[in-house]
Amino acid sequence: MKKILLILTTIFAAAIAAAQDYVIEIPTAGAGDIARLSRAVSIDGIHDGIITAYANESELMDLRTILPQYAYNVRSVKTLSKSADYIDMAQSIEEMQDWAHYPTYETYVAMMENFAAQHPDFAQLVDIGASAEGRQLLAIRIAAEGDTLERPRVFLTSTMHGDETCGYV
Image 1 (cartoon, rainbow, N blue to C red):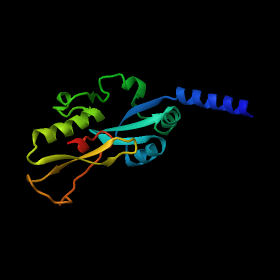
Image 2: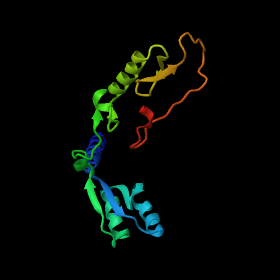
Image 3: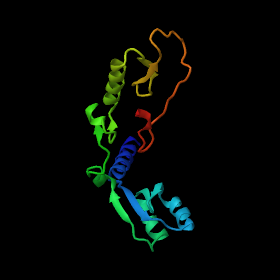
């Protein structure tokens, strides 16, 4: 029984390793085509008349039968990850100056520490807990020097989702 389980696990792992993911760009179709398309692939968004979607090998085959009349651009995620279009992580505060990169966690912490150090008269770095990964959750408390309020009057927070950097601005 253990031998069979080991063989099945190995086959399953090999299948996952061989799986290929794709980024697909499709010219905007009609509403009916978009509805059919959304059942086959994961639509990320529509911009400048182009639908951007993601699919695995099986979903890509389904797409070819659902919308055979459309010409579309298909790129491998593995290829994309090595291209200039791929997200470039900022390794330092200097690389973050133009906001064209995502900060690494270490860069984010350095940015928060740097802001508090540059503005000690009104900014205080506060550790408000830990993430599920054990990373510090940081906040900047902004108050007049000597302000002893226990709780903030306003607490603003956000997160990063997809290609949005709002959580770091």
